[in-house]
View 1 (cartoon, rainbow, N blue to C red):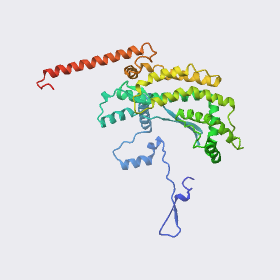
View 2 (spheres, helix red, strand yellow):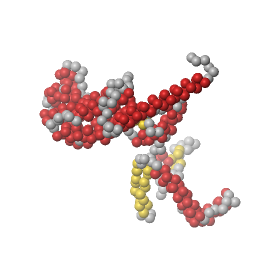
View 3 (cartoon, helix red, strand yellow):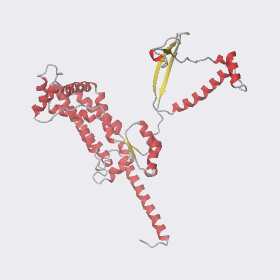
View 4 (cartoon, one colour):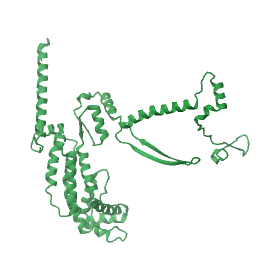
Length: 385
């Protein structure tokens, strides 16, 4: 049946004859069993093709395949045991003739070559890997591991990225707040997609003022969306009530909740903006910013239970992700050596002394190296410069 059925794509026309098409059958499947080696015709064929080749028996062939499978599966098991994250895809099917069912599972994973690429790039640009004092990346596990493999324990988590995770995760865990933000996004989307309301909004404000849409990858876009909406809430309400197809306006209670949420998120936005500077050093500001962030968020008095829940979640996220930030040696040293901060923002009783001790060791090492260089220059015959 398979050999006889052909589609239009399986027909080839002969150019030498008018309107004559030759049917081309599909390629046959050659899934032969191991018993083929016992077939008399197959053995005769092999004897003609390779007279000196000794064809293995069915038992020998089965054993060789089993041995090969055992050896390769051992190799892959060892490889899979070192993979940090694996994604599985699976499918089930039945064999028509035997009524047997099979479950196929495929494991997808990527071997990390990030460390190798980091070292190759450094070598290409003449950067001595021993001189790399720190590498800043996001908090992804594969990036942290790659830095450790390439340079040792020199990884520093990106503070701006960590702040993004703090706000993002706290908002996502607060289900009722997510529902409120979804209602707000519906209003903003309606304004963006409807031309008339947008024109009315601009005419009412008498300037090119637009509502801001949320961007999933940047938490502060949620902050700016709420901030702009609260700024234009009276104008937005006047536009919405004139359109029957508009989404419902937020209630006074919901607007009050958003005001409190904005109050809680404002210190995180300020810290994000401060640490995102590209024309000044930011490493010495990380510890002071976290300290000031806690001093701003903790004492906030908010009445709404939803805002209180968000406040609690943010404090938990800060403690989870930045609770030991003072023990990140490069950041602690940078803070102490910054004359604006020195030791004033440290709350960990051990972190500050450890950083001071490290600074003393570094200074002692520099002095010793200078002394050795001075002694060697005195022994040389070269005139003193």
